[in-house]
Length: 136
Length: 136
DNA sequence: GTCTTGGTTTAGACATAGTCTATTCACCGT
DNA sequence: ACGGTGAATAGACTATGTCTAAACCAAGAC
Image (cartoon, rainbow over all chains, first blue to last red; front, side, top):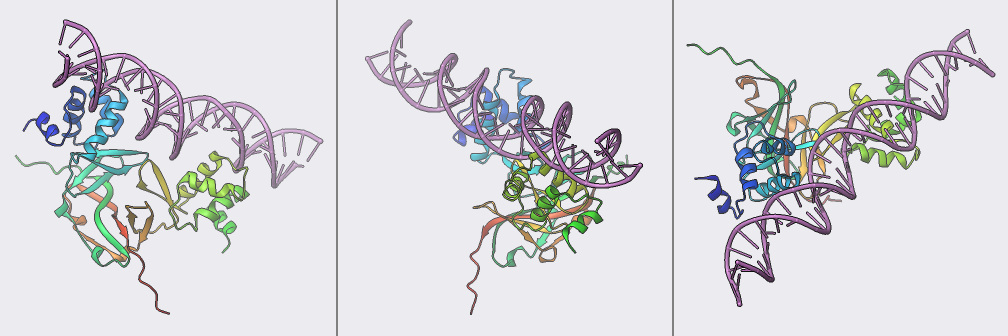
């Protein structure tokens, strides 16, 4: 399905600016910040304003196409991966990696007295290990 | 042990301003922000500057007396609880609660390919349940 | 074709979190 | 009293994010 129809299905009028923002953020792997999206989108659409990018990102969040995550100091990051998953943060570079939901198991959250847990995630911090050399 | 000696033990010259900041933040239960600490400390020490509060908080973090946590949008919060623990965030009020380390168990983090996990915590979100009425 | 209308985009003002700098202040040893 | 070291202060500065008012644009009514 093309992006234009995907926006329309969620009740979002597809404009060139919104398409540019959505095209980038919905396929981003690096958990961009709003100003990161702005910078990137301006390469293709140099007249786009900051307000439009912020408005569009918030709109995409309200419509459930992307999520925000509080993982960096001082700024929110956007994540096109809307299903539950965990995050690993490289303490050297600040890079954020998605960890699949089923890679980790958390127990005990259902029996916490006085807390009605609706969602949770594990935040891991450490160093990215060099990928093991692939055998030919 | 009194606070003054505690600061000195960590190589921090105790000044009235630093004592006021430390006295508050080291016993705070509500995970205050820097500006929250400023506001509170000014009640007792109205001439204290923003820079001093920020400097002191950062100093206490560097010396290991408190920690920062990235749990709120747009701002860091301070936590006097320096040992590993988890956090529950009330989605209605934004209040943050500490969850003891042993209340939850996470498995799978040791076998993640390509990630050298040094620390982790679980972030839970939901609603605080009314405390069960205490029997007299 | 022109007018109107509703939603969109824009620039810039505003708000808040946090850092930095230059000056002033306070304490200590001489 | 004097000088020096570190701390505190006010205010400038940067960055993230929101808000507002005006300009813009596309679609339908005439």
